[in-house]
Image (cartoon, rainbow, N blue to C red; front, side, top):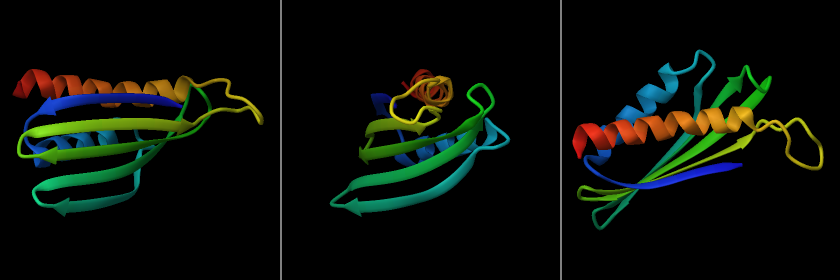
Length: 115
């Protein structure tokens, strides 16, 4: 399992749309498995679960992306899982790390363009 978290200033809708578009267009095997949205007192939360096939690891990897925001203050958390080929411990986590790198690139690019 690998994790990336960051705080971003910007538009909740724009960042969420950017994440969805770039994750799904970044890999021919990427899919949006499910999602959930919640809003209360101006605080918004979007949870998305993506999955893709990892050519490097020769397995499927999932990534949970949570975006929380109020006004232009945003918190992004992404956690990958799966990808290991062992039964009792994790080996070959290349696919998880590569998937997580994609969300890092999206977040850092968004920060540069909107910061």
